Image 1 (cartoon, rainbow, N blue to C red):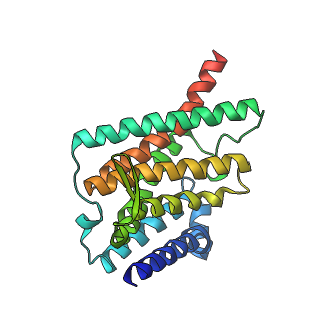
Image 2 (tube, helix red, strand yellow):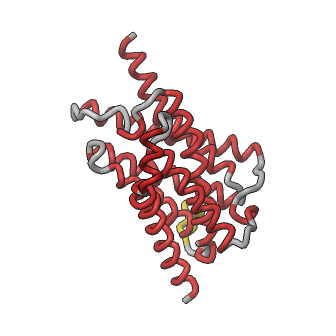
Length: 240
């Protein structure tokens, strides 16, 4: 019964977080005025800041401020390098495969999301640094840790064990990107959801294995670097 309640509450927390950060908070009057008046501020910053505040509050209230239990601790450097190497290889294959598919089908994809139409440096700060860390704190930090009572349930692939918390958190993280529907071509949104889910599985696996958010953050960062950097490299090669 306890495990079922944990699962139900985890889903409720996830849905409430999406509602608050993606719909309600950005529409608050003074926040809208602030975004309109501050040149460098946009809705994506508000979403990330809101998610961070929610995650920290949940860790303080539900986790009794035991931040180390939620991944705020170190990790072996060797494991971090392994996680980055795996993330780089997997993300490279995924993005190249998708790029080939888009080329074959002659599909035209947007080069970015409307709320990130800014300088490349701004995208680096928002996507590589802010989003990678904040999303890991909420998903692999709070949410996956909250579902730890379900850890005995999972799937084993050879020596790799993916627990239910890892799988569910990865799926929640992936489907969070449904918010891009209508802003990007549907085939690209589907790829982003799949890509984010794979990212979540790798990040969640290393979060559970090490007890630290550090490998998870670097997995997330690597996927974002490849996702943003590969198209730039390919364009330079094609122009050359």
